[in-house]
Every structure is written in C-alpha cells, then in structure tokens.
Amino acid sequence: MNRLSSLILVLAGGAMGGATTIPGPSILLPESATVVTVAGNGEAGIDDGQGEMAQFNWPTGVAIAPDWTLSIADYANHLIRTISPDGVVATRAGNGMPGSVDGHGTAAQLKGPDGLVISPSGDLYIAEADNYQIRKITRDGAVTTVAGNGRRGDRDGPAREAQFGYPTGIAIDGRGVLYIADRGAHKIKMITPDGIVSTLAGSGVPGYTDGMGRAAQFHDP
Image 1 (cartoon, one colour):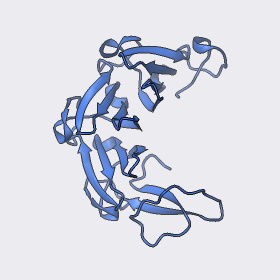
Image 2 (image 1 turned 45 degrees about the horizontal axis):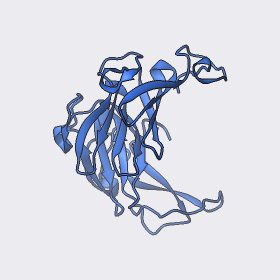
Image 3 (image 1 turned 180 degrees about the vertical axis):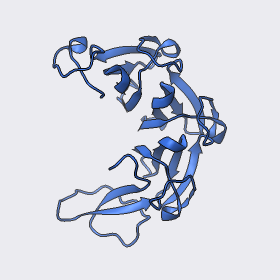
C-alpha cells in the first residue's frame, strides 16, 4: 500500500456485510480475497471516530492484538491510533505535536512513528524513525523511551546511550529481544531485555552482500 494512503485496508476471506468489522483469521485464496476499508475516508486528517469518518495522515505501521484491536502508527500526525474490532478509531498516544516526551497517553509526544510490534505481555513497541528512538506503550498507556538518545547516529551500547540512524522496522522474539531494521545505518540491530543495543548484521556501508554478521551489507532495510 502506498505510504501516503490515508486508509486502513484489510484482506477478508470472502465478502463482508460492512466495511468496519475486522475479520477473524482465514485462509486467503486469490479468487476469494476481498479488500475492504476498515477506517479512514481517504483524506489526510487527524479525526477519531467510526470507520470511514476517521482520518489518518500517512499511516505506516500496524500491529494486531489478540482481541483483534489494531494499533496504527500515524506517521505524519505523530500519533499512535487504535481501531477497535467494531471499527472505532481512537488516539492512544501522542498529542499531535512532534516531540520526544514520555508520559501517559496524549500527554506524551512522538515524532514520526513507523514500525510497530506487540510483545507477548501486551506492550506495544515503536520504531520511532524521526526521533531515532525505540519507544514503548504499556498496556495501561504509559509511553516510555526504551533505547536511543534522540540524536541520529550509529552507536551500540547501553540503551539510552545508543544511537540509531533511522529505525523503521521492529520485531520481537519469545525472549523479549527486539530486532530493529535501522534503515539509516544500513544495519539490523538488537536490544536485549537488559537494555543493551548491539549490531546483529550489517557493516554500516550500504550494499548487497551476504555473509556472517557484520560482513554482510544492507541498503535501507
């Protein structure tokens, strides 16, 4: 999907009676897959509300909770939004002004949130590209900084001293280790549960080379 789209779309296994119900898991076959609009009216904006009455501005990342609530990284609005299973869009974190402020819910500030992942415990982790940081939203809505000192760079080490070049993708494993696609550093990095950032793969020089760890090369992962 085009990054500039202001719609949230899903694939459903077969036709749906309405465009605001998020389907359960299904096996998608080419002849039966149907694209439906879950939320957004196609115009850039910041409105919460039901389904296509809501507006987004450059939605990038999406994560799905076990109850089928969607979390959306609304990049250009500097917000994290949610879409409930019945299609209601709400703002979960951020006040719409770009910044790097920890706090609860809309008292926090974000800047250019991109990739999202939900941990097994239900915390939402954010690859916050324009702040060069990794942030976390706990289940009760507290926003905290996990890693990155807020300055662009490429530095491993203790989480709050580390630097990222432009983190966009994020994943988590069963041990709680975070994996970061650091687009600006041309690397894949990892963050251990005890807060150490290290380079898993990539030399830092853009290229296309297979190999072991830092001998490999990536270009804008």
